[in-house]
Image (cartoon, rainbow, N blue to C red):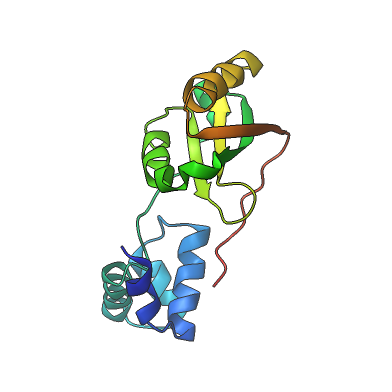
Length: 158
């Protein structure tokens, strides 16, 4: 959903609490949510539907530990585009969506243009990713790689 559509809906305290509960466990039953919120199950379902339609709830996902899939190493890679390549940001972003190593990436304002979070088998895997997906792209001016030693997930800011 577009950012502007998300901003048109005002969240009340009940919506915020519902989002907080879902952020802690998106698999909770409607009954357990409605019980904790002190509302009827039908009201809870209606709130969920409205939040989905407004784009506030985009999707329900699971977090899988990359290590369990054979990718024990994670890295954050800052990417800076060539000064004359700003018009290619959308194209570079679309290309990054297809790299299998990428867990998530951010389009930034400031000195760096992208921050890419990847999972890899080892440092050679990271090196190959940087060379093949980033340095080989003529729009990319430079990269800086930082290894992730620990990653903590926190709840939603509601």
